[in-house]
Image 1 (spheres, rainbow, N blue to C red):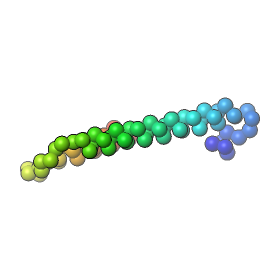
Image 2: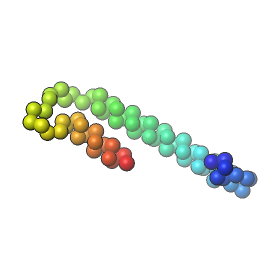
Image 3: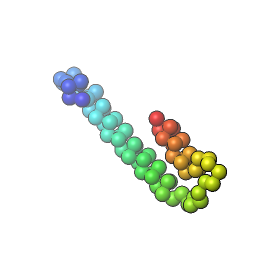
Image 4: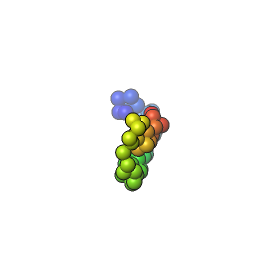
Length: 68
């Protein structure tokens, strides 16, 4: 951000960009932490016999698609 927002005139923009990036990183960290916790808590121990996609696999794929 130093190169993009250089000079005194851009101090506020630089500080806001750094702050926003830190908040975005924190939110991403928390979101992925919640996701890992949800997957770990899944009690599904059954195997899928009929060749369909396992419910946990489907959940993970849908969650990742949602994040993107």
